[in-house]
Image 1 (cartoon, helix red, strand yellow):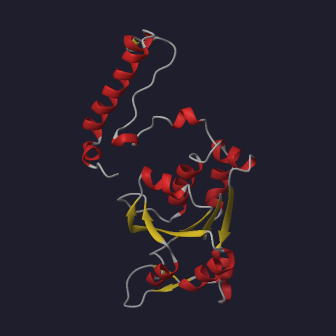
Image 2: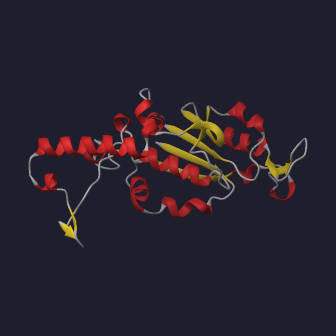
Image 3: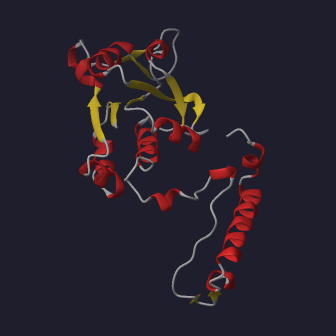
Length: 224
């Protein structure tokens, strides 16, 4: 897979690409990730990419042209172009599973007051990572990249993907490790029993309990 991230601030993401699972996935040729500064595509003086909004209002708006020129330079027949925007469709785990099937993802990071609305004529979909506002799309691009790359074959063990939060619309079960007793807090006895049927039942019941307590909305999302 290839992922191109279009951003005005590539340095915000260099650390993300050079640590942990993402770094190993790149080293193992599971994914190629490029940070592309679309400021380099502007035709204006002083590398200008933004201007005031028609109709007035605070802040600056990013112009379409530098982003469109960048897209025209890098996109292929396999490209799937995503605009990161709070007005987009809410990102969920099922979207990560869908996006991992593409050969080439292009993620566009906005900034300031956003991007000229006409950019939506050049993208395949618009995604929001949640009901809150960030200073730009860089963190959102990192979240989507991380959630997709970890699902690629060979990036992490298949066993680690067998049961995770949001599978079957349930949160994941709690996990424990040594010591058995930490300052009076005990590991549940069933996990020490060696009875895998009972352990499976316990873990499933815990998933249901935690979901009802913390994310009851998931139980109603049968189509997710």
